[in-house]
Image (cartoon, rainbow, N blue to C red; front, side, top):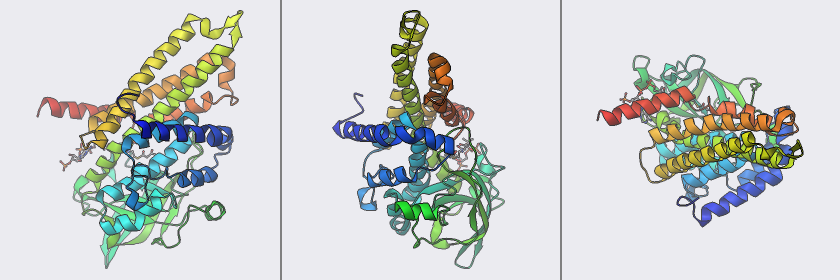
Length: 403
Ligand code: CAA
């Protein structure tokens, strides 16, 4: 898509597209039905470098730009959003804060294992009392000799079970409001050690596991069912001072910055669902015949698809532009929120429209559009609800109008 994509982007896009068609599409339905985590494909994606797309080569990443990363998420999500969120949560929520705010020692210790996909990472922010109001964190980190003990609970944590390295927020100064929140890198062994042994990725015993960290039961979700979402509990879990990420009190602002870039990832994932649903609808409506002609010939159908194609194109411009801004070190808070708001809303609309255009067939699991409809809903909730995106956009507009 001129002017954003060069030859390298197109080649990566083609590689991911091929992999998604050959290795994801055939298993997506079964993974969704059984809510099984796709360990085999995790290993295959790790071998291809896709758990470290925007990470520098010297830290075992692919050394590619953020736009490349967005393309990977989009292509994966065309066939299965669970694969896409697995790469996205790992990369933007676990690896990127360590890259952005970690010391050289922390980067060398944790990033290569994450970027090469040797272990999976997660982000421990949301709590029972701290969702959209992210500053409502009550998980506590108490300074002790040589480090901190962390006590509290996080909910809806992607990779809470299968992962090993987490960036976790906790209150170090209870009177400090959002300035009293600090981030830590916390490790625990994967709950799937047998699977990790079988596929050869997912567990690295040399990590500094903290006793007192445990994962809850896997959530039974409406969509993104093959991704691993759980609670994460901390019971006086000790972490060394060298696992504090950034200065005390900077946790909130740092995760706001992390979420800015993360939202471009979810926007790309949403775009992938929208495109995937659209492709299914075109395929079906051009073949399916009713009243002696393809249903495509009915104006309601081809007008509907023309509208969707236009909206997908518009969303793609927003998503790639936000990634481009991020790659060029420009402010991205507003544009990332706009991209996510637009693409997530569109994913839900495109999947719903596809189900409608497929009729009875679309309502069965014989076609992926019903799964896409369930998967798309998560895009309007995860990494900031659509209402939060509007709040972020409005606040930025206010700032621009009142400098
Ligand atoms: N970049 C840098 N700094 C930022 C910032 C940004 N984007 N946004 C806010 N800040 C700073 C402000 O400048 C301010 O700093 P000072 O106090 O030093 O001046 C501080 O952060 C507090 O800002 P606000 O007063 O705006 O904070 P708030 O409490 O009103 O909250 C909010 C703002 C936008 C609502 C925020 O809480 C938010 O984004 N909430 C949504 C949380 C979210 O997205 N959760 C998803 C979790 S991850 C997930 O969901 C994973 C998954 O599904 C897979």
